[in-house]
Length: 238
Image (tube, rainbow, N blue to C red; front, side, top):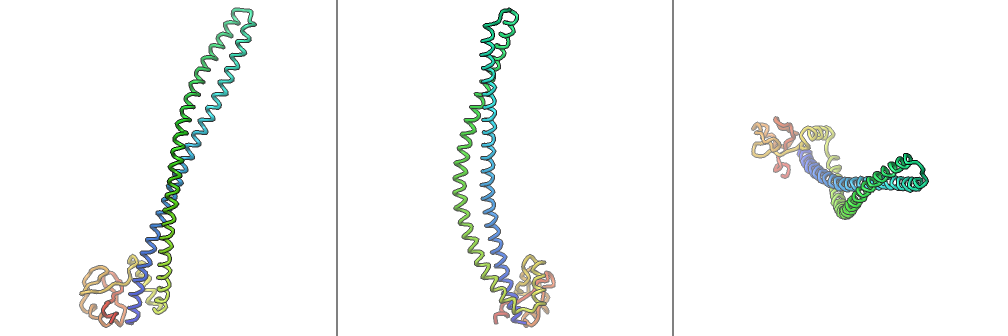
């Protein structure tokens, strides 16, 4: 049983190392995802700006088409005006020309507003393109660093997993079942030291009779408070 207890303690150390490495790997993966998300968000903002600029450009084109139509209307009306014989008809055509000229002024003002808006959007797009390009370069470098760190962690995990498999082979199935259940129930810590009369898992005082039994290391003994498996390191190492 002493060997089983020693193997359990070793297994606990291995599993805690694997847990720690898995946690670090998860953090690095989350960092990578966050960096990629920032790139995607910046790309989406740039795409929205480009779409807005395209819409403004389309509106400007339509206004220019309307302007050209009104200018053609004025040209035709002025040409027709020369052939008019009655005062009433002349006044009607003059009113049409006046209205068209007023509309042309409004269209020209709207076109100017669109031109200014396009210039502002163009400047903003150029700025965002530069920022995105710089961000992509920085993120690419950081992602390469993260990949290297993750590869190193995975190598460590693989080494520990191999060692774990060898350790588990020497333990009875019933002991492993108990260990695994405690790991799930006690946040990954199933085996703890008993030291100076206390359980180092929950820091509660152990009954003297139970504590004395631990020196013999001939049975799996659990803490009556937290139910973790108790071991005494000095006995295991002797």
